[in-house]
Image 1: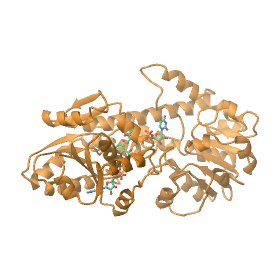
Image 2: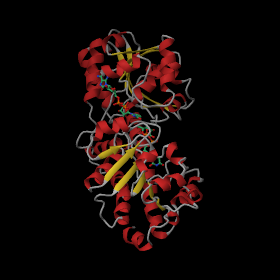
Image 3: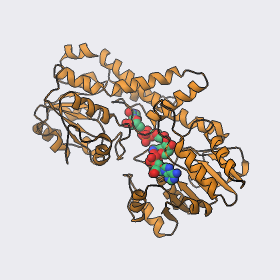
Image 4: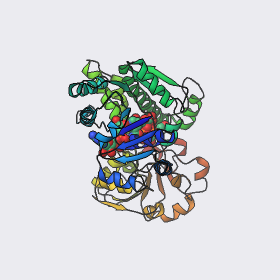
Length: 446
Ligand SMILES: NC(=O)c1ccc[n+]([C@@H]2O[C@H](COP(=O)([O-])OP(=O)(O)OC[C@H]3O[C@@H](n4cnc5c(N)ncnc54)[C@H](O)[C@@H]3O)[C@@H](O)[C@H]2O)c1
Ligand SMILES: O=c1ccn([C@@H]2O[C@H](COP(=O)(O)OP(=O)(O)O[C@H]3O[C@H](CO)[C@@H](O)[C@H](O)[C@H]3O)[C@@H](O)[C@H]2O)c(=O)[nH]1
């Protein structure tokens, strides 16, 4: 099939490359000339495992190209997929301006029947809005499809080529059948819904996963007070098939370009129909508090005064294996430490350039290695569970830190890893591992 994907970001680029890998003829369109230059040169503008190889391979095979010429790309395609951003507006609603612009540009390029699919995460009713905008500008026939995306950053290629399910929201059987045929090589689990249900299904999925995370984080907070270990609790819960093991990792909470924005948007969607989504509001609030657990811990250890203390930060991306720092907990944690007068030394294997762009230079020492960041620090905070940190030599780490204080925001280390070390170690929801942290101090704060 001839496919145009509009927006070559984390979703559009991965989708476009994977559609080409399936044997389709794909054009990826983006407005960002710098991104296009990188792509045309055989590189990729984001960090995503296996993506560059597949992009190169399919470009070489003549199945994949990159352009800013949306008009021509649309004219050459039978299927047009919109994958532009839908960031948060100040009030939490999704900003649909990129969607509107893409719809108008598609309308102007229409030269015969096409399927127009929205892959971006959009509020219920947006496919109808897109349809109306296009209809205003062209009399050409087309069908609308809602095609929500469920890939995760860091494993986006794997998720796209082996999805749990494909959801197709349609009101035209023939268009739905064409989209089902396109995705048939990927999975047998193709879920057909009406358009509004498909739009809702995406938000409901993200909100549910975010709820699992905030739920386990609250359980972790209680575990700390009652002397239970959240990792053992989550493990035992997960064996119940109705609960499952995934998304029960306690830590400093969720970040990224999706959960924070989509939970806020769903609260707004509900509000517009006069429904207060109380549960989801609590999920967001718990998540916001959770990232400050690290700070509270540091303040406890240093008697409320971080002025002049050197704090090392390991991990800036919102999760491992991505360079994405959008709504990463690290942004607020670093800012808070800087504001408290600490000297903040940071290291991330991949995400420093993006973090610098988003955060700025304010009060941060950028380091090129994990041990360099830890050197002479009064405490080390692990924010992202990169492999490099998980496999660190703790004995060596202990010798480079000024004080062996390790605050593990992702529960990476186990009791046996710490055995024989002198770390004052604090993790989330595992009081028995909180070595060296004074009982009365813990009691005061948890
Ligand atoms: N990032 C994820 O993991 C993920 C997963 C599932 C769904 N989503 C959803 O997918 C959508 C895209 O997310 P993303 O992370 O890929 O965004 P992104 O910001 O990485 O990419 C969007 C791209 O669209 C381009 N663009 C915007 N308007 C354009 C236009 N009119 N013509 C051509 N290009 C245009 C931008 O230049 C940018 O490169 C969002 O709605 C998001 O919620 C994201
Ligand atoms: O048990 C867990 C699992 C995740 N997280 C955090 O949750 C955030 C999101 O993680 P993840 O879901 O793996 O990454 P995303 O790439 O944001 O993917 C989510 O958001 C995408 C955008 O909508 C969806 O497509 C995916 O299905 C959905 O998992 C990260 O900060 C993780 O550290 C936890 O704290 N505990």
